[in-house]
Image (tube, rainbow, N blue to C red; front, side, top):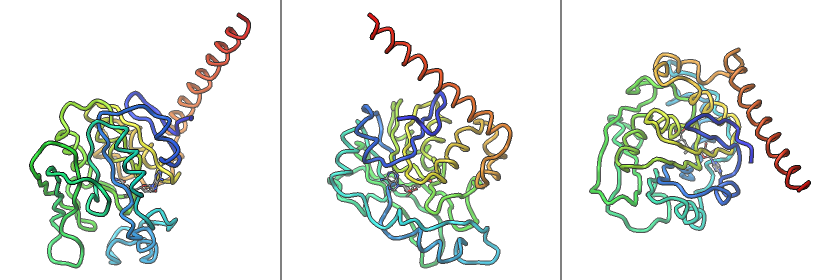
Length: 260
Ligand SMILES: C[S@@+](CC[C@H](N)C(=O)[O-])C[C@H]1O[C@@H](n2cnc3c(N)ncnc32)[C@H](O)[C@@H]1O
């Protein structure tokens, strides 16, 4: 299948992980954040795209497409786990997963309100329960990251996860959203394959990969806009040209074989 985006470290596929993962090999780490099945996309869209519904909050046009209507079934989680040596699954308390001692806790430093204080990740790592504090409360976010996906995870959180997994060189995220796993992997010099079924999120993820490691902090304010800049088009053209030349070489090999 032709990737939506590819660079030295990250490959993004636009499509359904149920169909794409069986065509891929094995990875060192499955690091993912599947839909929790709580309809968060519909809730966000109802609020008109504002976080907490406050006038001061940045408007985000989250459209509902039903991606958060159901949790992945057990067969899918089993299949995904079979494709990796180690596993970290955010929202693990929502899914059917085997017992584990190595849970991760993300304390969002939310203060006193109706929102969850923490999120949990199930892991297959041989570690004690670990906790990470990272402020993520509406517009108040450690690291001042642009938020383009209703359930986006902080970059620092996923970088921490990769560190906990030890010597992992290849990472799979089949529910990639805005591509935070890929960005963390790329920053750490690891390879990652991301899969996302919504094209608008593939686009945002691709932008995040394309931005240089060093300019990410300052350039991310443009993440949520449609990519139509000249540099972006050049990068797309470069990737397209590479695919065309690879296709051409494949065809040549087929011809050579056909003609002995
Ligand atoms: C919880 S979000 C991931 C957010 C991500 N961690 C981030 O930082 O942006 C889950 C994502 O999985 C995608 N998704 C749902 N079902 C999928 C499927 N079968 N194949 C690929 N992507 C899927 C949704 O569109 C959604 O963007």
